[in-house]
Length: 170
Ligand code: RP5
Image (cartoon, rainbow, N blue to C red; front, side, top):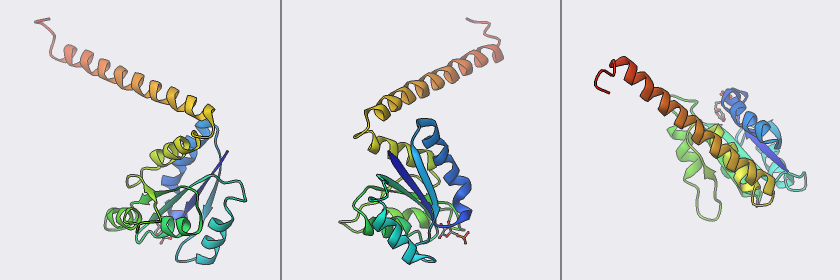
């Protein structure tokens, strides 16, 4: 199984790294590229057109500002494209979000939250898990672990509140 993460600029990498780390945790092979819809459009077209024959099964497009990368990649491939809007400008990422999410019908880009790199990777894994049952199992484990972590935090909070109030009436 293989995923691709394409980012519009090296400046997107601090966020993109978080998606890489999720793929690594789940044992998903991935490649990360810097390809811009505006600055290297011919490479974007080639990459998306050849992605399937290169073994890629899902791709994440991370971009900021007038973020057309997801839409352009999705125009050249039939595989699912996940849009990761990057908060890279004075508009706090709203520009990126709207540029990605407001796709015309026929060319969907499954857009996650601004800077939501972890969810972009998790969604990619969920898409891959339709074909790879081992990923579905890992996703179930991930959810169980996440639940246990929140319950632990809740219990710690309850305990600390009891101590801070003195708990004299308990
Ligand atoms: C977008 O413009 C990139 O994805 C990046 O988020 C933003 C700014 O790019 P740089 O000017 O930092 O290269 O295309």
